[in-house]
Length: 253
Image (tube, rainbow, N blue to C red; front, side):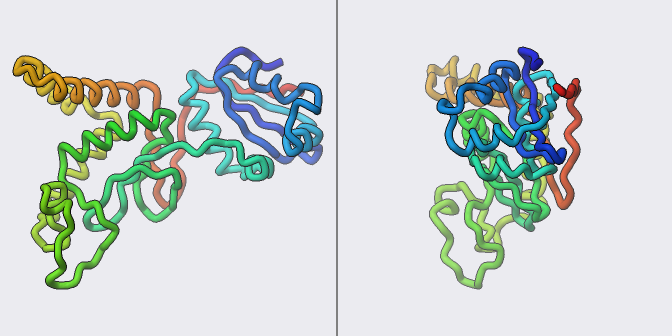
């Protein structure tokens, strides 16, 4: 009854409540793993399977779309067995914090505090490479402090040129905000200018026989392409943003 397609499946109990939401690269193969002899299942999974009265699936275009849809449905329905089984992987997001001098960092927890969250992403390695690129291209605050007492001693990041000196009062708020806006453009998929710049840097490094630098720029380009092609960014503020994905939904019962 389930197709060999990427998508999201929901299990319902006899009262019509969603008790579990899962995603799969191949819906048919994944769902079949639940309906096997009980001794092959964990105790908690066996209990959940015994409660299933109906199922529904949604076919999407890619595994990345399935990840986003699963994430939204879990937040919407809060299915009991997603919590009890605790087998759903937490995926990384990139957060741009909502403060005067924002930080840009990886997190696996979304907090509705006005910050911007991009993701979730399935390729944590690509996320870290993108953050490495951002760290190389821009000077942003690394510490958690928002208010600094007069005469505070700057941290190491200031002395090695990784922070513009927010704690010392040297950081220009307008310039800092402009850099943050550029990063948001990159994370939103509007990265053609950055990609062109990286290609130029890669070619220059290669011509100068700086092969390690050329390889680093190459990896940045690949990571940008990976995030752009296989992930979709969704920004979460005070209210969840809708993620629009072409889908086909079918009840199995």
